[in-house]
Length: 104
Image (cartoon, rainbow, N blue to C red; front, side, top):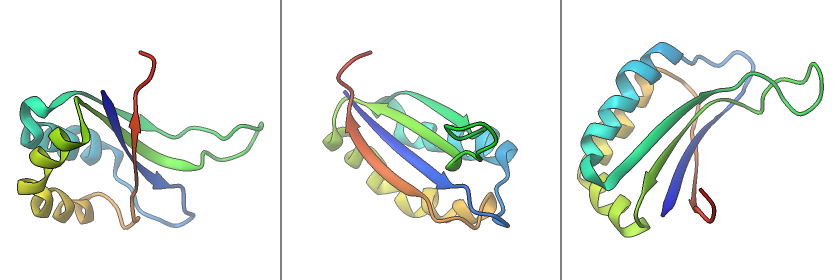
């Protein structure tokens, strides 16, 4: 199992519409990925590691898939639509990481 994490840095003055991301963008992504996406989550950053420290990321999502190949095969045909929707909820540049899930 792999986890695709898309993280949005907490940049002062940046725009991020959590409602749109949660209610429209991520359900659309999950629908386009279909059965390749086993499950998904959305996180809203609250705080950093020290008291009073801001969260390093304003938001992130995690998509769980069987393999990198399964993710790429499902994402590829919809990449333009998915990436094109980013401007509807943020002006931030997302960071992406693909990880192997070693414990569930």
